[in-house]
Image (cartoon, rainbow, N blue to C red):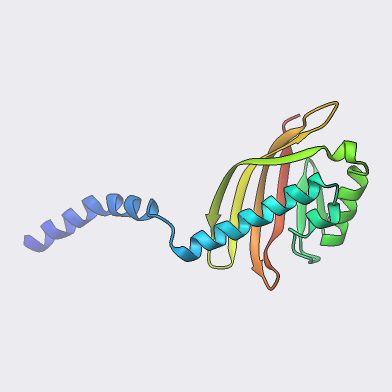
Length: 154
């Protein structure tokens, strides 16, 4: 009887324990990882806003497996993604000023993470914006984007 009561009590409080554990503060390693990933995004915005697409692309893994998805288009490979950006944003006017907001980080393990948020371009004639989901991987060059799925709010 006593054992069954203990099991019942444990089953009753398990959801509370799981919820408490999932809302626990991140450890120092997790904080460092999130900070490093945020630094990549900050550097991307800064280089974009200087008109430096190659600098912006430094946030992506230089790999043929790097994937960028937008609309109905899938672009594979770091070089191909770079060329897509260079073609679509061939002037400072088209590039505008980029900001990221509403960032949400989820570490998927020691070497991978998911980030989603909003992007916004402020240009003279318009202000395109939308959402993105990024998959980051820890590489020998630090945290880099291996998968980018970006949508526009048009």
